[in-house]
Each structure stands twice: as structure tokens, then as C-alpha cells.
Image (cartoon, rainbow, N blue to C red; front, side):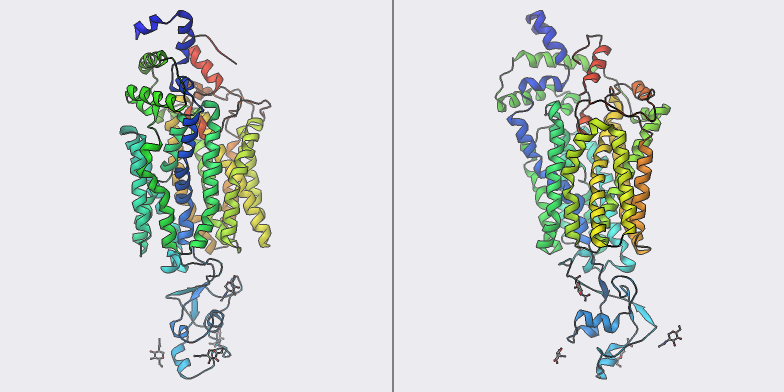
Length: 591
Ligand SMILES: *[C@@H]1O[C@H](CO)[C@@H](O)[C@H](O)[C@H]1NC(C)=O
Ligand SMILES: *[C@@H]1O[C@H](CO)[C@@H](O)[C@H](O)[C@H]1NC(C)=O
Ligand SMILES: *[C@@H]1O[C@H](CO)[C@@H](O)[C@H](O)[C@H]1NC(C)=O
Ligand SMILES: *[C@@H]1O[C@H](CO)[C@@H](O)[C@H](O)[C@H]1NC(C)=O
């Protein structure tokens, strides 16, 4: 290394050397926004699809129509219509659907039919009712039989729908640890392949499940891939992308791939009209496991932290070739030299450091709660769509469609109004809309409120991601974000049960969304604003961060535009760099 450095003129060295400390520094030399990056964006497509399908498909696999009633075998053979059967055998009720969904009149219909009674005109006024043993469903709104209707997950078995969903997220908790371990020890690509293969097998097996427990086991396996299936590819693509274009990656992945996939998902369920076939179709994007190593590169950061530096250079040369760049070959050597030097002086920190000092601990806990509240509101909102008496396919599709406009509006507002105000407003508006939804009984009004609150929740979710990535100090940033993520998944496992409360009182889920989003809005006001601030680069800066901020102060200037997970990649703000340079006793720089 020394020889090579000496052979470069002093001016070149000062120009090149400080700029080649990290992977982000060398990337522009081989092209950081060229053909290679466009291919990577395209390669994200199957992973965006898997994420949307994993997140939402179970909703359509298990959905049961609200209009269900006891199936009475004696009446099925005669040519009664569904309406006749309900009129004859099912006790009426005051609430929608105006008949009892779980009980039937206790009458021996075999006897009556044998006696030749005209059941249609006979008014059976029986006080005694018995519980159903099997059910009939009105398949007009939801034109297919789901696993929920096949196995009669209604009435006292209704919680199976939520439990199965919860078990899916339990799978993703295990996946988080298991796949995380593989990702650290064997590499990101092997981890991605393992989790997607398990999920491929899991979803194919799901289509063949025929009992609650076999279904639950299959969903647990499929759940292993949840989040990992998009997190790993996203982090890899962000690494290889120009710092200033990382917002584009996040917007393409979520605003386009995820939004489009989840918008068309209900219509796939509707037109396929067969839950087993639908499950097979949902497994298709998982087939990307067979081409993953050829469409995504291994993470450069992983190579670097595992000492496989020659692989990084190999990769860089390939990128240069694809982007048709011809960088000075010496940049590679200087980069290698700097890497070896900087590897020695890395600050080591563990996730426990987040809790050792009071302010940082408080912020971490607030961030965890904030994220959990967002997840609970978001998921409950998704599941609550089936409570509105309108086509669930239309309402689901409309809600998912708000993803892209919400993302775009947020990019505009987040850097003008700040994270704190945006976080507060989106959740406060969600709270107001949810409570309003309780008050109105007109279905179009409910639907409008619902779509609008999903719009706000989409923005809140993006803010939650961004906030964590900015507020946690660099040495523990990715560990801290993972910790928040794990709590988020625990919140995912709780949310399905909120919808079960609708059996107690129809308005419960909306009330809970209102309360939880209010709590989230209140919490976020206690977090320090990160807009326009230098991001905390050390644990102690993280502790001091925002100490000088007034509770009522609002940011009034514009800073650079970066969104969401893009900041996970850290070190990308000008002022962070200034701090870093100062720490290295080098001169300050631009801005
Ligand atoms: C079916 O219903 C029609 C009229 O609704 C009636 O004429 C016919 O006899 C019924 N058939 C049987 C098998 O009950
Ligand atoms: C089934 O649902 C459709 C549409 O909601 C409705 O028109 C029909 O009357 C329902 N059938 C019964 C038997 O309730
Ligand atoms: C209904 O009546 C039929 C004939 O009278 C009888 O065979 C059958 O056991 C009765 N069913 C029940 C459940 O009581
Ligand atoms: C129904 O129950 C009420 C009181 O519980 C009783 O007065 C009435 O006689 C019952 N009717 C029949 C048909 O059993």
C-alpha cells in the first residue's frame, strides 16, 4: 500500500485519500447511478411483490363473509332458496345481517317435512335455539370459499382467523433471529435464499392444509420470510446506490412495487376465486430464490466486515464495467489501504448502550412505543376493512392505492415541517377519522374515513422508520433499528386480536385504533426533532441530542431530502461527515 500511495502526487493523495474511507466514497468512481443501479431497482421487483403478498394474502385466504348462518342438512335437499332457509330456521335479530349467525331454531325439520307441512308459510315461533354445527355462507360479496369457510372459522371459532394471522407473525419473530444470524455469519444472500425457500415451501404447503393446525404450521413457516424478504434486498440495493438517490429506491420499492402489488392483490383473490389456487399464485414471486444470486450482489458492507475485501474490489470492477466507467485503478488500492486502517479504530457498541444513559434510553423507549402503536393501528385498520359493509375488495384496493400519494406527499412535507410535527399530525388525524368513523353510519362515509386514515397511517409508518434511523446514534443504529423492529413484530402478533373484539361490540376496533393513534401522537411530541440537526455520531452525542430543543419549537428551514430506510445506511448527511472529519482531525468540508 505504501508504495502505491507514494507513487501518487501529494495533491492527488489529499484529493483521493479522505474521500475513500467508506464504500460510499468509492462507489461514485465506478458509477453510483448508472445502468447497474437501474438493474438493481428492477431486481427489487420480485421482493416487493413477495412482501406485499406475504403481508396481505392471508387476509384473503382466511376471510369469511359476515353473512353466515346455520346449515340445516334436512332443508338442503328440498328446493328452498337461501332466503327461505333463513326465514324458516334461523331466529331473527335486530342487527345486521338481521338473523342469528350462530344459532338455529330447535326444531326437528325431518319430522315437519315428513308431515308435509308448508314450511315457507309456517311461522315457527320457538324460543329454544341450539348452536350451529355447520354453516352456510352468502358468497355474493366474497365469491369464493376460503379456508375460513371450509373449516367454519366463525362464531366461537372466529378467533382462529386471528390466531392463524398471529402465528404467521410469530414465524417472523423466529425468522428475525434465525435469518439475522445467518445474515451475519454466512452472508446476506444465503440468508435471503434460506428464508425465501422456507417460505416457498410453506406457502405451497398452505394450499394443501386441511385443518387449523396444519394451516397454522404452514403459515408459521411462511412467516419466517416476512420482512426479511424485503429488508435484505432493500439494504443491499441501498448500499450500491448513490446516497442522494436512496429516496428513489425506497419510493420505488414501497410506493410502486408494494403499492401496486397490494392494490391488485384483492382482485387476484376475486378473480381466481379459489383460495388454494390463490395461495399457489402468491408463491410465484418466491421462485426468485432460484435466480437471487444472479440478480442481487452480496452486501459490500458484509464483505468488508468479514474481511473479504478482495470480493469488494471484484464487485466494484464489475459495476464499473456494467456502468461503462473506467476509474483510475489506483482508487481501489487506496480504498483497500484506508479500509484496513479504519477497521482497527471502529467503535464497538451493543444494543445495551441504548439503555445506559437516561435521555437515550427514554428516546429509545419512545421510539419503540411509537413504532408499536403505528403497527397496531395500521394492522387493525387493514383487518377492520372487512367490518365495513361494502365490497372488501374495493375498500382494500383503495386503501392500498394511497401508498404512493402518501409517500410523495410525505417527501414534500417531512423536510419542511419536520418529523415530530408530521408524526403528530398524521396520527392525530387518524385518531379523529377513526372516532368519526364510529359516529357515522352511512357506508360511503365510513369508507371515505377509512381510506383517509389509511393514507395518514401510511405516512406515519414511513415517519416511524425514518425517525428511528435518524435518532439512534451511528454505532448502535442498525442494532437499535432491529430492536424496534422486533417489538414491531410483537405488535403485529397482537393486532389481529383487536378485530376479534368486534364480536363484543362492533365499534371496538375503531375505538382502539383511535386510542392507540392518539397515544402515538402524544408520544411523538416528546421526541426531539431531527430535521436540520446533525445526526448523532457517537453514543454520547445520542445522549445529548435535542437537549437544547424547546418543546414548542418547530423547524423552519429546509434540509436535504432523505427518506425512510435510506438513513439506515447512515453517515449520509453533510454534517455527520463534518463531525466524522473533525473526529479524525481532518479539515471540515463542504456545507
Ligand atoms: C320447487 O319449487 C317449485 C316452485 O317454487 C315447485 O313448483 C316445485 O314443485 C318444487 N320442487 C320440489 C322438488 O319441491
Ligand atoms: C347475499 O348477499 C347479497 C348481496 O349482499 C344479497 O343481495 C342477498 O340477499 C344475500 N342473500 C341472502 C340469502 O341473505
Ligand atoms: C327427528 O324426527 C325423526 C322422525 O320422527 C327421528 O327419526 C329423528 O331422530 C328426529 N331427530 C332428532 C334430532 O330428534
Ligand atoms: C317463550 O318464552 C316466554 C318467556 O320466556 C314464554 O312466556 C312463552 O310462552 C314462550 N313461548 C313458546 C312458544 O315457548
